[in-house]
Length: 174
Image (cartoon, rainbow, N blue to C red):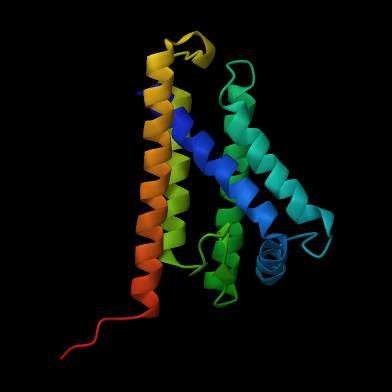
């Protein structure tokens, strides 16, 4: 179960970082709207994407796993604080492309829930996980775990896009 959790976080963070890199102008706009420190610097969005990819990949190796989990915690806390500042303090409506051009949603309660769930998964894996060495697992177990993690990430994206679509097109009462 630990391997599935780690691979799910890996897929989510690597996919998020890569998809943001592929739609860098949208991500740069989101950072500017969030008024993040140094948000106008052209290198900041690239560094954030690189940090997401590195942290996600770092979960795969036992030697870097603790540092990757700390980096993920810091990124989630930073983004959570930025969302709080934008939504609660400044009362802004900001469209976020958390997964690049694959998803586009207005920051709100669903964003906070996702940040909380990812943070909770990260903390639970830090506290309760046994040492998992992906490179010594049997090939069949690795394939099943990778496919399960990809399935979890795809399911999360489907639910996210369904929720976003439901917000954009509310049901009409007839």
